[in-house]
Image (tube, rainbow, N blue to C red):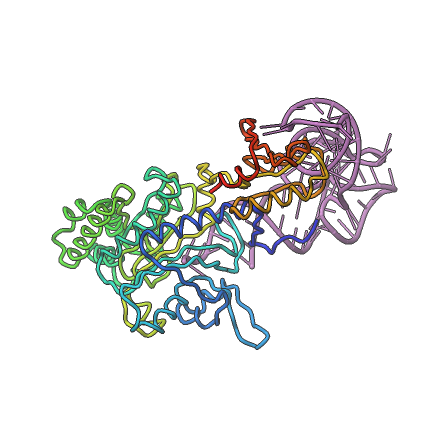
Length: 427
RNA sequence: GUGACUGUAGCUCAAUCGGUUAGAGCACCGGUCUGUGGCACCGGGGGUUGCGGGUUCAAUUCCCGUCAGUCACCCCA
């Protein structure tokens, strides 16, 4: 067997590329509706760009190597550091808020599994310069609008939203110690991916008290703002965060996505740079990995680029999304859109076939014809399997008089008319 | 990086207990068809059974290694 693509990398045959182009096309269309502009950066970056943000622990998962100039480099694993650098470099001259998006191909070095390869395409959308929660609502609306545009409904996909600050306030109110917070987050993050009893056990161990674990479970079970208010409305440290969540959900409602959004305080995004409202998109059947994740990272631009600007964004990959769309039969048929197949019933008409094809192409039509002389029957067969919608037939006893026959390959209907009239009838 | 399972034609699969020249459908190409496609019939190309080694008179079949795929763990940008 011939050498295939490297492990975790994909060959995109026309059928697969059509699916990818469909998804990225929807991404770009939705971003246009939200008045975002597209940017891009280098696929290869200095390794240090990622070391600074995440420390050495993540370096093991980077697709990194030493180049011929002895530079330590990495294929970009995410877009945010590049984005932060680009924004920081021109921060003063950019109109705020910055609304930019990108569709980079990203890389990681680890063993592939379902929904995770070594390479994928990801929609990145970021807003910079707006601290208000309206921006958070705008951001999640974008992600959900992509879902809707792809043919998915609120019954297929949900956004689960949380706020680290709110969760922290409620955990501290539940007598979780500050020191144990990171461990508690780790257990919470795992919840749902393992049996409830095991999570409960781990939780009790981490907070070193069954009573506290019960209180933490109670916090996590709050699924709407009303419940939060009735249970924790008197907690001073939490009120401001509950109010903010309440505003956020009102704005999401105004943007038309309230039924897609669920409050879920157990959403703890992996990397620690999120500072505010965070969200993840999941299929409601729980069949796939997270489709999309994002949130507010107000301090990251300062850490990476040295400018103090609030920011938020999300990433949405093509791999899980493609799996979901295929499972729901929502990938449009990728048949070629050949408009015309030109055929003749005489080999001597070869140059006439070519010149008719040329005239059609000048009218912006997609045109194919048999590159070698063939029987008319075979030409029509080829036209059918190419997916052409119509055939233009040149007949040896009619074409010299300027007449052609247009055949609809779906209905079989034919119409004969002068070639010039036909060409002029096209847009 | 760790573990489990799986590798036969482009795809989906078959091949008795280890036994002759590894088969079929689909797809592709051609013929019937000096002239209007999809149908039908006939034919053709295509295989180092992932790769390497071992056991055996004999390996697609049994054993070991390796590579790849799938799934899970780790981790999640």
